Length: 199
Image (cartoon, rainbow, N blue to C red; front, top):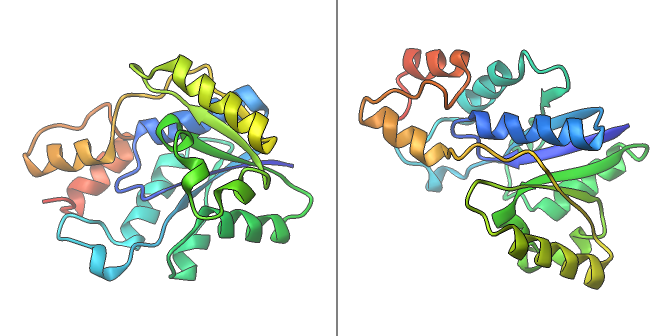
């Protein structure tokens, strides 16, 4: 089975997240994508940060209509600082028959070799990279080529562009009482409103 992993805070999950997951699914023939929210330490929370329960609930609503997307609470259940290397290694041991593909944005690719055990991570799985409008594709391609040469990394740049939206932008819009229609799934928009999130 080809399994994609898309990690993030998902505070809140938006159409850019689900869009890049679905693009990776289509372009790389993934059988499923596990949307994996990270654990947030209590001392990092502020009044506008949704709880783990809220973030998981919004994710479940966002992927309900997406056949191959699912929610994984692996990192939240660990309740520790989550390093991508540790997560991918653990999932590889738990699902040794799976081919794992880590899905990320271009900004993450540009710094991945500086991450915790980044060199080892680049050899653990393949990578799918989403680009946003305005990205310097040549620079991203050059970085991918360097990582392939230096670490024998398997990296694919997705053709479908990511939507230019961020969770920070959505939280700020909600706080100002402005609409977020078209940025998140309708069900997520309703959830945010009904639970008074980000106010």
